[in-house]
Image 1 (cartoon, rainbow, N blue to C red):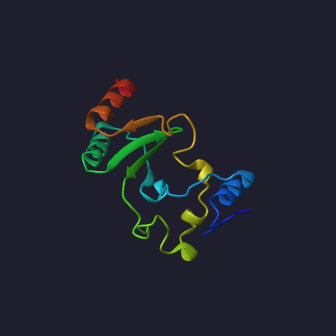
Image 2: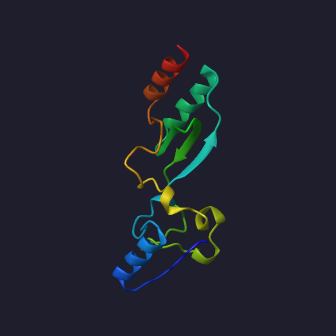
Image 3: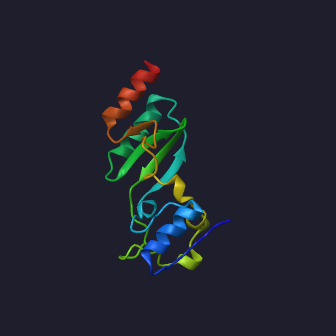
Length: 133
């Protein structure tokens, strides 16, 4: 069962409800509205690695591996994110948003959310050498 709430005026009540329902407190965070990750194939050749190098040379783009799967991440704000941190199309937002489980938030947990993170060509090359000699 999904619980959604646009406004509860009493912060203590809101926090208590989130605690009772086992939900994370997302108020003011908006992290999930500030990036897009797309699953991609692991580079299988140096030519394919070169394409990933090209990607991470762009501002606000990085690649990562999470649980053996490769992703390219674009750090970019959703156009519907309002200045006050609310969603401009909350009632008709995509299912990716409405079905998002706040317990999966990158803020949750004490460990990194990735196995490998690549923000520079050097990091990708080092990984390639380590894995493929």
